[in-house]
Amino acid sequence: MTSPNDQPATTHLDRSDSRLRSAVGIKGLTQQFLDRVRSGELGLLPVAIGLLVIATVFSILNPVFLAPNNLVNLLFDAAAIGFIALGIVCVLLLGEIDLSVGSMSGLASALIGVLWVRSGLPLGIAIIGALTAGALVGLLYGILRNRFGMPSFVATLAGLLTLLGLQLYLLGPTGSINLPFSSPLVRFGQLMVMPAWLSHLFGLLPGTLMVVLGYMSHKGRKAANLSSDGLGLLMFKALVFTIAIQYATYYLNLGRGVPWMFGMFVLFVVLMHYALTRTQWGRFIYAIGGNVEAARRAGIKVERIRTSAFVMCSMLATTGGILSASRLASSSQQAGTADVNLNAIAAAVIGGTSLFGGRGTAWAALFGVLVIQAISNGLTLLNLSSSLRYMITGGVLAIAVIVDSMARQSRANHGRS
Image 1 (cartoon, rainbow, N blue to C red):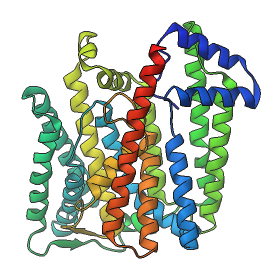
Image 2: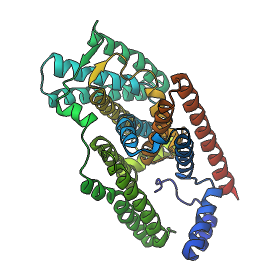
Image 3: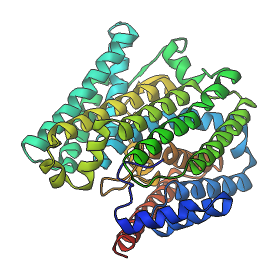
């Protein structure tokens, strides 16, 4: 799956793609794949290689790493950070950044504890209150960026400190609020898994959407006399993807099963992918990230789109904070601090979202967070210190940025050839 800006830019490239698509069978698909890699269109290849290497190394060092129940726990932990990373993808596509997502998730956790446990409000009202706070914070960032020209790096860095202070103030001297273990929220974050049959049924959804959306794109491009990937390649990719998901689902069901929390995260990824690739809002996001001045001259309301992205990012960070509280069964001063910012931003970048804007997909949050959480989980099983986890995660992030920069240079050279 590609973003709207992943289109051949010249007639020369169109002719090249047409020749490649004329080849049939596995040889033709392989040749097309290799041509895209040479042109800098790496897609999810670096993430797939990274996950394979991580799984191989950690399973050798500790066979428990690939045990079904350990992978189930990994998915439980990945969902909360994944929601935050999904919001980061939205702002990175614009060439912006939000450094306060960790503090926003911590504040959301505190709001759940204060509104629900201390004040006695219904859980639904507490969740709505936390999401409203997240939307207001994102709106404020949009105003600071659009009306006052404050760089998002500075605005969100100030927000990081402010939200952290507000979190500490709300929690008070005790520093933590325990959530009821028997509550639906805590059970959702710790225990609830899908029935096996339902998890396999949901596992068909991504591949089905790939086929439906890909066919619609193919049909539309053919009607406009534009080059398009062949339907054979589309079906092949969807089939491989579906087989992989079904096997992973089967393996997880050998243990506790697929967590509902992770399933909800995947659903949000699918919805965000649709929004980014099939709606006007998504096309505007990519256009602004590619060239903000050109987008402005084309009549796109840059300020409005930018504000909506900040609001979306903060609300998704709030969702991640609520899920984190459900996972830990508490609201504490440690929520949202430490490596939450690092992991969320690293997940988006490692998954293939460019720091320079205009390139990336919602799937980056899913696959990137799997890499980050696999590293964290594997190092925990080896009883290694958190300092080593920080260094390894930082190294992986640096490699991801280098790969992104090299891919940009390769695309630029390929476009000039």
